Amino acid sequence: MAKGLPEGMHTLTAQIAVDDASAAIAFYKRAFGAEEVSRAMDPSGKKVWHAAIRIGDSTLFVNDIFPDMGGGAQLAQLWIYGENVDSAFKRAVDAGCKVTMPLADMFWGDRLGAVVDQWGVKWNLAQRTKELTPAEMKKAQDEFVASMKRS
Image (cartoon, rainbow, N blue to C red; front, side, top):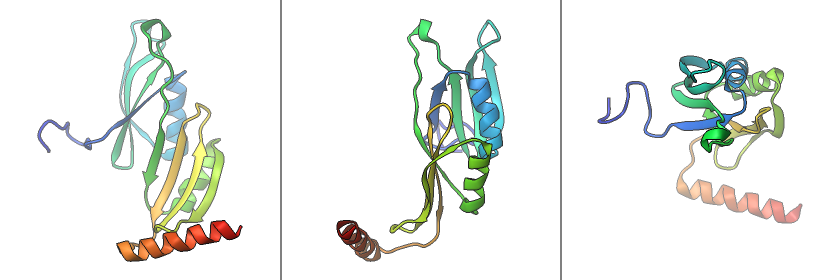
């Protein structure tokens, strides 16, 4: 364990605040195979003060919005890297995510597609399909830019 880092956590941990965090957590379980790690409810028992879910080897903090305490929706753009991105993408769409960018092979070596959930959070689902040297990446980028100009 790195100094100051809780067991199982990474240096960077994303957090989102949404209206109806309980529903969001249930959705993320269906859409992305999330596992609930912990949940702390507010005194009313109706809102999530803090929850932690795991997707793959990463933790995402999720909580409800609390306008009376100055907290509104705070959305993020999240990336999930893993194997079998095509099936992961299908799973997310089947669960109700809307496609904002269909899956495609990217010039930098990823297969990538993007969806948005009902809370407006954008999820980028990606799989590294090939490792490129800096020179190969530059060449692929230049070819991509040139193809965009021709379109």
